[in-house]
Image 1 (tube, one colour):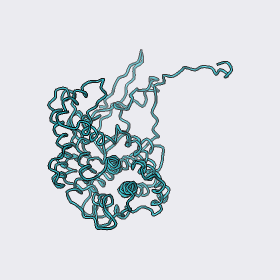
Image 2 (spheres, rainbow, N blue to C red):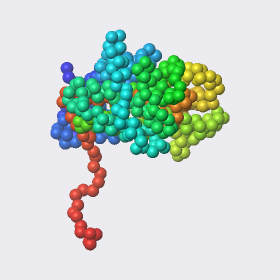
Image 3 (cartoon, one colour):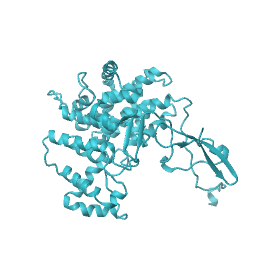
Length: 428
């Protein structure tokens, strides 16, 4: 029997269908609300609104659960390659061995950029933020690859998806090389996705780059942990742009722009700044006292999450990866890691933070890992964008293929002037 929700305004009452998904909360279908009751719903930030159907990612923030196509994030991060996760998000199932080999080959054949894109980089200042370079270059890709521009054709959508996912490591690494004044390093067909990024990022023309398996595994995990995260701000931006029929390169560029915001993609950089500001373990109590003071404006970065009201499942994997990377690099006494661990211990034993369910999130450790690997803070968010491109493309593709898909058009609560009459300038 169909569940319904009864909504009454004054003497008029209507019933709205309640829809159940595979997991998670039911939703009330309010699409007929304006016609039936002449009202809209009001939900600033869309925090309590389901904007779409999706089969890609499920999050239970209360229990700290994150699933990609039903698979727990911990299992994927520990056992899968990023290429397998790309295939999973795009196609809904993990690949067979034959599918995996074919898919890896397909990705490899699209890692190169059109040679004229090299010239595009020269249009940026050397001190440009890598995210600005990323945003501009990804948006310009549609000018270089117009041969698959009809998004109503499944083969064109697939090719555009592969191109974006395969080329974003090259663009990201080249953005870094450009700001450093170093020669671009081309992708290598003998390396996997994570290895290729490290090679293009840190390799030099004058010598062969040697892959460190511990570091490449760390990057592989970081990419998996950031691949998709349901309908967050940047993903919603990609879907919103995509609903207009815009080409996928423009849609992902819009997602990159949204991710650039410090409240979204810059959190791990903010954690490092916070730890540097604290300085020493002895300063932690006074710092936390400032955090508790609502008038101080001081925030505890890397703790808490808009969705997770429990421990971020990605943080546990990131913590383990952090220890592996520091051990591999011979960093036994890293001041920032020691400070971070002490801050975590103090915060998790403080009733103020426990009551508010402020647990460490994925950003708390990722910045320390990236810093230890020699990746500058200016590249933290571009690396996030590199990983999230897979999720953006998968979400875009799912949206385009949704039957009855419509252009997104949120409503508003207008609080401006009522109608008034124009007054000539000499009478104002």
